[in-house]
Length: 96
Image 1 (tube, helix red, strand yellow):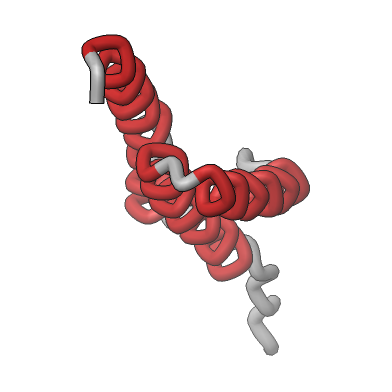
Image 2: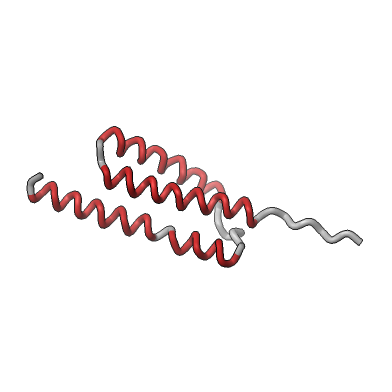
């Protein structure tokens, strides 16, 4: 691997780490508050499908940073979707 390829890999890896890490505070917030009303289900569902595409693309191009970052981000996005479904269920009204 030449110096240019090394720098490209470093930049890609740092960028992938930062964009993946950006989702951690959202997962933690939803989990702690037990509230996901402000999260768009549609946005995260479409985003998750896009991440699957990136993982496939990474596999086809043998790009470890693309595969790793998008697999981790997909896990975080799916966690947010699961938490949204779990915490946004309507509560049943008390019976009298």
